[in-house]
Image (cartoon, rainbow, N blue to C red; front, side, top):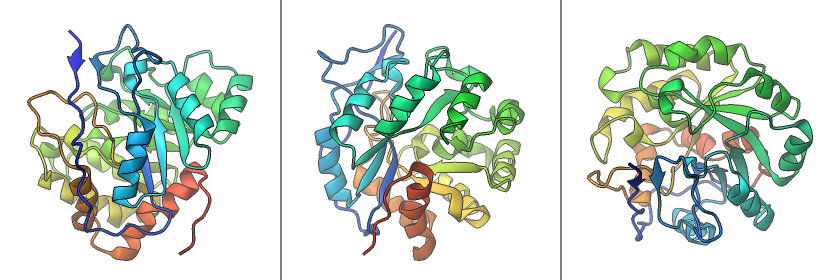
Length: 293
């Protein structure tokens, strides 16, 4: 059965947080129009159209400058929508694709020129619609400086840490590493993520708190995780909206995107560290131009 994702809140609040110049949303997805970009036959979910133009209006409300478009799972391994968006808005977006196993170096070079900066792998428990860790492909993209974005499931980072750290690439963990909030900050999966951060090769996205817990906004159980990450490596954290919050069951509460950004006031009380996470870190990771006030 294919899940029909609920749409995002159409009335985003203006957040209390004032972003620094050049602020970056490091993880968003676009969908549609479905007549031009049909869903993959094997997708576990469908979503309503979530267009670049709609998202850019959200950026204005949240006072964001740049964003990283991640190839949505609904499209399988087809990056057509992502690549078309990069062509249309080269100064605004970077991209992370869900790759084919046999993606060639000439194809990587063409995508690199458009602004693709990484590939997304997932753990075995996430299913066959996404590729799992592919060492040969990781080696090919490393020649272009691309990173490996990895999405664990529950606590299964423990099963994949050695394989990830054996790669030459920078590693970026999705959505707080998907650690179960109920397990607390002393759980082995989260302690493993902190050790990975300490290597200097691993980054974490402060995003998708709803992916770590069954409870709805304000996701208070994630605050200790956020603060512990900041204590360990504020220079290798990025913030992301995960707009339009696809693949959320209809019974779950849809957060307002202004409220989601304001969680950073609670997660990172120190303004200097918060501004770094919202801007300079992502400029470095994704190659965005530096913005000065």
